[in-house]
Image: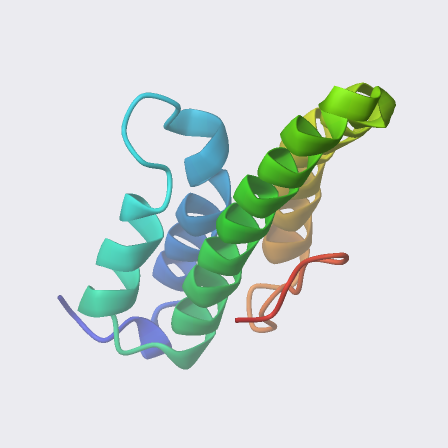
Length: 114
């Protein structure tokens, strides 16, 4: 793959693909797209966006597990709804932010940094 550091359009496209993968890829593991992009690019901004996207997916997965367990005491049902909305809205916000400023990696709020 060519070095996307010199190509802002490619940087923008790859960063958007990383953040859009959970929305576009429900059947196959949504984390596969950012892993492939992170492994094939040399652009530090794209790598940072891919890593952030992977962290977001892992965090959402953990929040779903916690919510599922807490559903046994009824509070988890509300958490499931909140996590569900967040798993749709936060990637859309990330895509918008990446399109506005492709030279800056986007950092999701409220996620575990792994």
